[in-house]
Image (tube, rainbow, N blue to C red; front, side):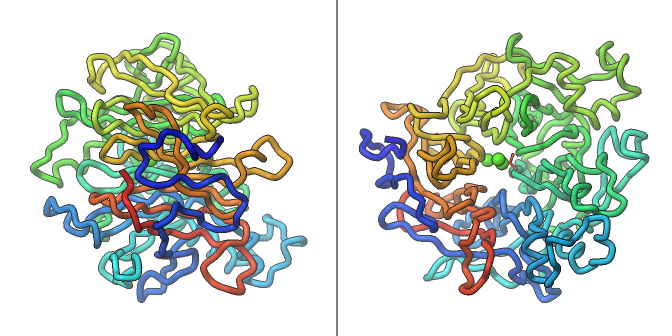
Length: 498
Ligand code: FEO
Ligand code: CA
Ligand code: CA
Ligand code: CA
């Protein structure tokens, strides 16, 4: 049975079944509260919670003092894309006759599109009746399609980015991660829509980077780190090499694109937060060769293939997708989320699918770095879970580990009652043990509302709350009477998650 219901159960919850029900369906005893949804005001300036919520990164409010407050914190939320069709309805613009070439004649629409994307910092608190957004002018703020953002690293000011040292806006913010020094990393993924929607002066070399935001300091400039390469970034998984440098694993979410890692030049300094702010500005970017089980450096200075094709390291990083394939990176089936196992340091990568060659259900691959060191240039790998009938999950996307080492997996596909995803119904959330007798067996924790992708799983340190986003639901929304679905950030509570 696809849901995992009835299996020898080690899960702390009674699994739910696949369903077409147009709601967030949870196991008995669990409930959710809606923290924020698209359009909600987050501060007195009138900034709004953006659209298409994806990543959620929870920072205990006392993070900078080394605390683990699980009832009050800041959340960084990504807003992946705008929904112009919905905004046209709100503005009374006739979508049938609208032409993107005329977007300049609709300044309100362009404004809504730009304020829908990027990310939000919000202050949240657990109350008796669920988690709430705290209206707060100290922390609550937006990064959006208009924010001035610094470029750092080798491509800053280079010809490859048309000389830019800073750029306007962040977009395509899919998933991301938390740094060891308590900042958020937000990944720019499918950024072409700026062009597709007719945004003026759109320079695509300014997008497709990893963005760093300090949720605790609104005055610190938002930065895009070119040393981590430019591609359709899904997320970041950060760890340490045995000698204390930072590793960042990253997938390029496109069919037949590659898996990357960045190793910093500098070492992480756990005693001094500020000392870590430039760590992501210099280091080496590598691409994975699965056939050689080896990481290949994207290093212009030492690689003749790169020297033949590109003018400098800035051009290599700005074209990291093509450069990765050129030096021997293996084309994969849409590398989505990657996470590092909290106990043994193995690396789990979701390959969501590749319909181009008939891989409709994807798989999750587990990598073991040689000698247990993320700095190693070689690795082994195995398929941890194959999507499809046997496991009962399909199209794995975001991943998140709990402290027991169970892998939480959300799915991303669009099912109708007649297509190849019919048996899977609405997208779900699963917990998969990574050891013990239920190794690799998915247990379904939740089923999302119709048409949505459930995204952004993130547990509080006490593991009593699971944050999730309901992204692009068809009709489901927290406000009665609305004619279209709204993306929301929700908090799930009521039982144990491990
Ligand atoms: Fe935006 Fe790769 O999902
Ligand atoms: Ca994703
Ligand atoms: Ca993740
Ligand atoms: Ca996806």
